[in-house]
Length: 550
Image 1 (tube, rainbow, N blue to C red):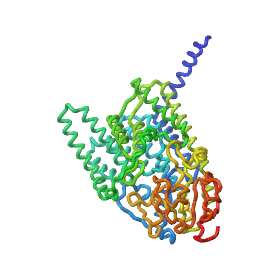
Image 2: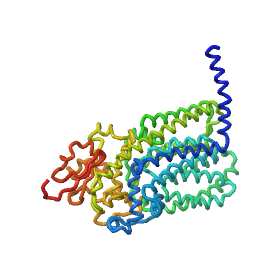
Image 3: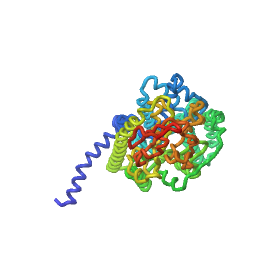
Image 4: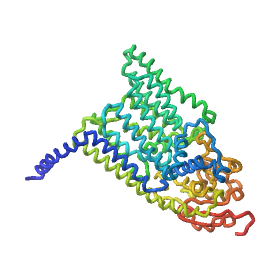
């Protein structure tokens, strides 16, 4: 038998096996089993680390700790007070403090992170089912972007709001025709809930529903009676559902904040389009993004792709908004960076490969599954290795007494680029952003010490600084460069730090992040600072009293 005949025989013998596998995967039990496996893989990294390397996450935990216990703590109650208002960013602030009455803070945090991972995936699946009326494996591939750049930045409320928006949109599309009154009433409740989770989720919901409605109106533009009936009926449902959050927004502190805007260079816009696939492993992340684009292009080229009604319009609106949107607006950063993730989840929720042969489906499923497992395994490795940084940070700050005032500064990438290029992957998203500078929140959680960067923005968090700590705190700040201590002001204008003025009088300790890049630590301001403990991740100094000898 020649080689070609052997190959043909091998393919024929494999065909029944592939067909049996496809028939098995077509069952409901198999679909639910694959979903359960996907969720289990996504949650596995949460069992490997106490404090995952997510930028804002330690800061959020510290705020939850103060909200849960601060009012009755003799030390924390002197620093912070609860300041509740109508704020469209309150999901974890409402839930987690209550959880801390039952669970340790790091366990409760990981439970909420698990929900933050799975809720957008549930929304993708529900929206896909509502649009296409079939149970498909394609939306399960949305697990590929569960660990994305914004999740790693710790934008938990934003992620939760995307999942809720997709779930509400799915329910809306399924029930609005047969139960309009119920949809209007439940829609008002749902939009109000999304408003308090995160304002961007409400905007995403409006884009999803508005694009679908406009697509229907365009398809039936020649049928004037049907057009007017649809506009009247669905317009009333939409007004009833979206009126409560519009009224609530007028009552928020955000409505009174000036619209100061900051734009980043154009190449950020190009790079950040790949945010849905960005994590800690640059090469693997870009490979996953390329694989997704190739698959979607191939499906479309060979007419094997169906799209949800209005999908093109929704993606176009999100993309144009992304291009014109600033990076900072109304005291909130990463405004434009949120749009690519919306486009990413919509790509998995709103398209469906169709008419694929058994072999093609098996090959696509195998490639996507391997990529998903590889990305999650890479992330799990980074998280497990991050335990070392957490342990070292705890050891460095172990001598800080309760009530101490700790100034945090950092050895920045601009200072020692070679050092930063060799850092553990858990301290940055490659080519995107550093994610290490909120780890000093452990000072508050574990030492009850004051540090100036706790999230206490009145437009975003229900927590306020009390005098005299309000003079030496600066909410949502990035720790200034360590050379700022020498200058007495921030040497990087993009990280304003007014609390640096007269810092030797205002602080008891200085914590230097990424101390491994600082060289001889004992030679750093020896007349002002006394080195107490050091590791690569950080070093702790005691501030010498003014006039004392080194």
